[in-house]
Length: 442
Image (cartoon, rainbow, N blue to C red; front, side, top):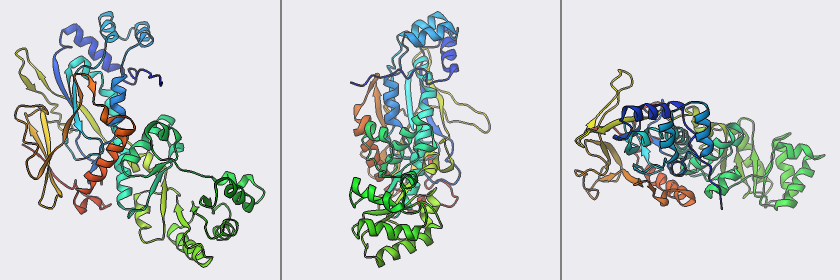
């Protein structure tokens, strides 16, 4: 049985000092509604893909202050004793609604709605944003790459280009975005993602000759393996690979060179040698633009590392966590909002729908003001041409288990494929442009 570590210190100090001051001012237990949204999409993006929800739900479930955390806070005089007493019994007991993981989103989409006391909700801010900002960035980049791959599989192989913890999260997010496999074993074990990988250039260099290396790999894994042919000379490597494995060689991998030219030559050479069914996998610092440039090339699969785990130039999705409403002493919801010129937010409880045309293509994101996700005025979820977007994730502190673990990861991947498939074709242009559908407040 796995031992769960507390996630309580994956946060910023000011979350606890706000709780400390609110306890002293007797406002800590006022019911509040916080909202996660993005004011804009990263430059050039026409849609985003929400990811990280399943990981986040598990982290919220494990958000506890053990004696170790409490002792550290006490010794550092971070908060006072009444707050330490409150933290000792902390367990999120409110409600959280959100867009389903894998859903596409747009500026202003209320992606997560957190309803609880000020103290128990504000303390989750850093954790929520650190998970959703990173995972969503990766999933959004992955979905763009998948959209230009023309159905050819893409594997995530960026573990060496990010931190050891982010590598596991990135593999999961890329899988949700449509990648087919990962090189990361922990992501395979934890989330049930298919894993892949055979050998690097060091394996070839270890042996006295390239032929010795190829023979060792074939003896270990059979002829259906993938041989890396560009350690010395690609043309010679391909000829040697077919010589050693025969025409039934599974695949070759090319990790360098002018890929459109090199791949075309490789395909011609393989066919001339009779290896007509040998697949070609390419790697070499790929991103959505280089994958698109290979759309007409005889590539069978791609491997992407740095670009996907860094969000293809946008390592954070730009999400914020804002208080949008709280109850007064009479129990009435009072909208609140930040009004700074460049960082305005829209106050009040909200619900969200996506509207579709007669062909089932998304045409509008509708955010309904004054109508909470469990509000009495909630629109008919069965109305034709629209789909409700907020669903309960945590009810009275209890996590909906369908959204976590391996099952939740597969569910998010399937939902992403459906949601991306609902977008108009303009969503998949790689050039700069505005969000592909507007967000309307009603």
